[in-house]
Image 1 (cartoon, rainbow, N blue to C red):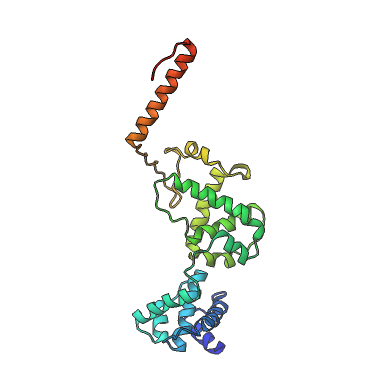
Image 2 (image 1 turned 45 degrees about the vertical axis):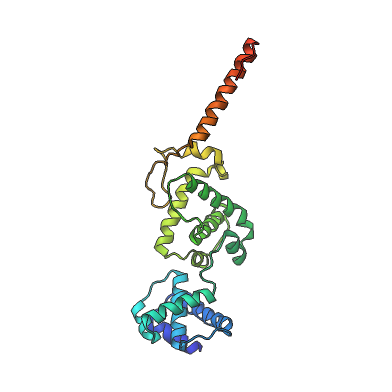
Length: 252
């Protein structure tokens, strides 16, 4: 089996790529364990090529998809259907959290700092008019990575990047965006409090977290009944002040 994996890896042009052979072998073995009660209608070539495909995705390495399809001996639809099935069997479609990453990489001491960065990011996103999915694993991975930097804790980027499901260039862009966020909103190693975010994120200063562009906050419409109640409460408070100063009861 190992020899066949090595041969197919070489034919796919992945021989020189770091960690691909090891990751592919790991996925093939894990798949065999988890598919004992699930009949896989796929040949060994297809199984290995798909695992190499998934390994490359996890490691952020590109390769020739057409060559992979040809080597697998599968029709394109069959290839894609099996790939989705493999992802489920191998739990590769599970959204990882900061805690999951820290546990798997034995970085428990940075969990709290990484959670602080994630909360800062979520707080900034919540006051922006944006549809960013903060549950995407890329954010948990970059939070752990930069928490390690803040705490001067060594961490292997090649081991951390697979959790993000990003390519190296995408990771680089995200890393720069988060560094700018930290520089601006994480002063003296302290997270900006939620109460200060509105003041700090004024439209003229606000930086979009996805592409670095500036955008204004979307005004929030106040419900009429809430506005009416607020105005009435303010009026009553003012009348009470007048009563106290003049010592003359005023009917409300």
